[in-house]
Amino acid sequence: MENRILVKDAFKKKGKVDVAGWVHNTRDLNKIKFILLRDVSGIIQITGVKGKTPDKVFKDMSGITRESVIYVSGTIKDSKQAPGGKEINPDKIEIISKAEDLPIDVSDYSKTELPKRLDYRFLDLHRQKTQAIFKIQSEICNSFREFFYKKSFIEMQPPCIISSASEGGTDLFPVKYFEKDAYLAQSPQLYKQMVACSMGNTFMITPIWRAEKHNTTRHINEIRQMDIEIAFANQEIAMKEHEDVVKYIVGQVIKKCKDELKLLKVDLKIPKVKYLSYDETVKSLKMKYGEDLSPEDERKLSNKYPDTIVFVHSWPTKLKPFYIMPKGAKADAKLSEGFDAIYGGVEICSGGQRIHLPDLLEKMLKSKGLNPKNFKEYVDSFRYGAPHHAGWSLGLERLTEIICGLDNIREATMFPRDRDRLSP
Image (cartoon, rainbow, N blue to C red; front, side, top):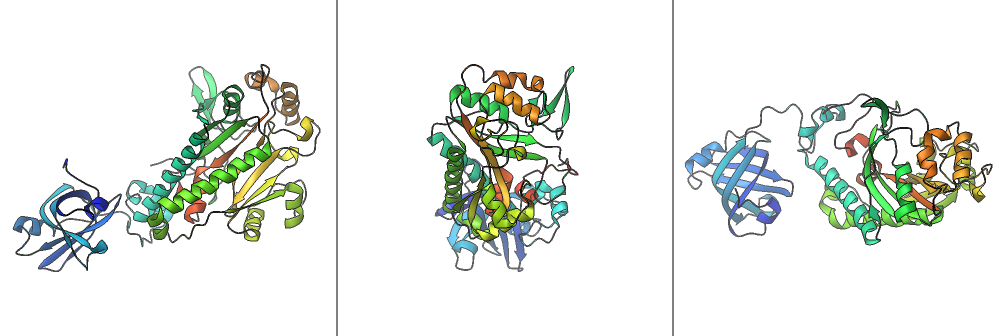
């Protein structure tokens, strides 16, 4: 099997080829037999003809079950009837692993409900539509990294076990860390600030955990975040970086994932951008001042500005975390340097300028009902020369859900973790 090539490359070859993959479908017409062989790159037809194909190979083609893994060696031929205009006439077929009866339908027309598909996620990943989602997600991650590497940002790896809440609140998962109490990180916020204030611009893709007892189509409890933090920056600079990277990501997906978008029936466009202050948003949506945007409000904004990233900036200080800079660096300021980004009917990002002044940070912690002593190391990190800085966090699964036109964030999560699901 050392000569095995991908299916997509077999279409470019002449003569003998070796391929391996999963049996996508079979058809037996007595004197002619077909196997559709699938790997991650595509599907090719294997055609056996009685009297031309070796007898054993022709006979073996009858007993191969769907999703069995096989190795095929044969000759590539032109065929107008075959998918892609090519087929392989086999000289050898080896069954590497025979599949038993499938517990779920793995065709792209599957009517199996999502919860059961997730119970058998390892098998659901055989579906071409499911594979398309995660090929696109892979391109999202790659494009995100590529964009910020080109801008000389440093990639960092924050800790995933922390000693106290990163953002306050009680929505954390406790873990036992030797003789100490600890928590799964709910955000890399504090650590990326430390890096930005010491080394300059930084980015990461990292998991975080939130123990919120949601059970909706837009929430899960283990999330992957794409984060940046920028030294010497305010919320305007941070929003521009967000605008540029999402446009870049979408452009790369359009360019490199044409087949996947076609399979998912998605007509993806590079988004436009709209900037609205919180005050302007309240007036536009006829909201009650001082409240967060509801899911319905987010949908209304996206309906009003289709195919657009809507940045809602300059939020009331009381609605933002303790580390977001109040306007004018005053603890009693009513407005902050914080923003959210709404795209595709959901919030995909939250960010803003951070507080880099220790005394102000302690005041803001107290105003949120938090004890500065629990954040001593974090506060102290700004006592030895810290520039003003800003950043944001973009949800990978939510962005994937929007780009792929999905109805449930679990479909955009390879192995989702929510209130009810801890396996596979």
